[in-house]
Image (cartoon, rainbow, N blue to C red; front, side):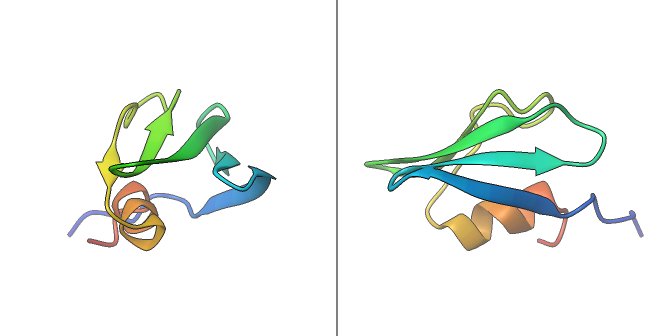
Length: 64
C-alpha cells in the first residue's frame, strides 16, 4: 500500500481561489472554474480538475 501524500494547507485568496501548500512541493493555486476545482502550478498534478474541493484534496493527498 502506498503512503499518503502530505496534507494540503490552503489560504483563501479570493472567493474563487486558494493559495495552497503541501510539504515537499512549491506553492500552488487551487481555483474554482465553471467545470469544478482546478490546480495551477502543482509540480505533479498541474491542471488536475475535480468536481469538488474535497475530491481534489483527496486526490492530492492520495486518499482516493
